[in-house]
Image (cartoon, rainbow, N blue to C red; front, side, top):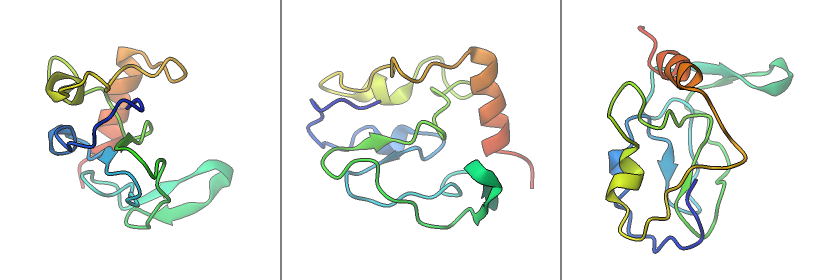
Length: 113
């Protein structure tokens, strides 16, 4: 997650291998930076991967947790945290995943076409 100490410098956004980081107020998509063409969301509804989703934050950069793999399978450590000048990219205490879950998410996001 990105805390409210964020200074909106944008250093984190280009570092994300899953395109899970967005500028405050920006819409996001499942397909951006992934191989997903469509996604089944809660309730069984299938939406196109390029369908715009509402911003999670209007004020600060934000991370879409369902697209974040903590850089597992790409880098040794989360790159957003590594480049953040104010250390506001931190583990979300309300959203914990195991290494196996993160690697499975990476495989799902970047599945072969």
